[in-house]
Length: 171
Picture 1: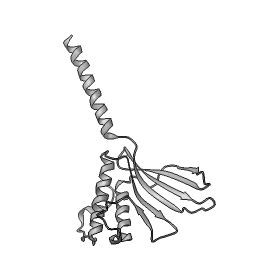
Picture 2: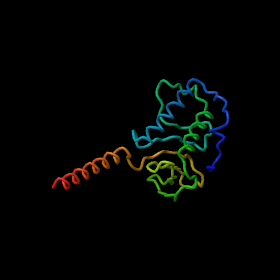
Picture 3: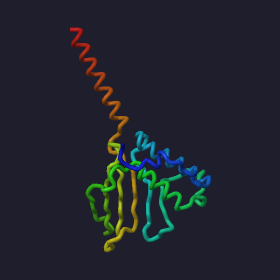
Picture 4: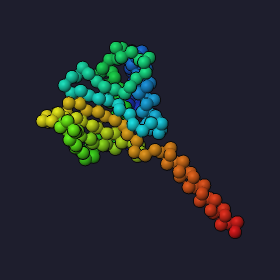
């Protein structure tokens, strides 16, 4: 039996109670995550939390057709965390790299492995100069290799090798 809880796959699920704007947001989120996974874009800022203001949340840029006033913060945040959980393989993360910005604040970045070898999840935290707590945090999907480009290069190398073999056999 595979590890993990299969209830999300097997158990009946009640329909999500989304507004029309949240339905549109869910579709855009789904497509943008697919765009990163399939190599159509190299990164996606999924979520930005402003820790001093719990009523403020940053998300990816949205089409004008989605009215922000019709998006409930809790629903948007939950959908985004579901996307993050979907790709994350190990929530422990790697080492934290820290830099001092020109303004004297501190920035940290930590990468997390995903189920996709060519994608990492980055967590970026910004701190005011003397504060131990972050002022804001960003979660971003980042492509570390372009799989489509790599596949094209591999195919070209395979074709070249086949050509050399053919030439060798003809001689």
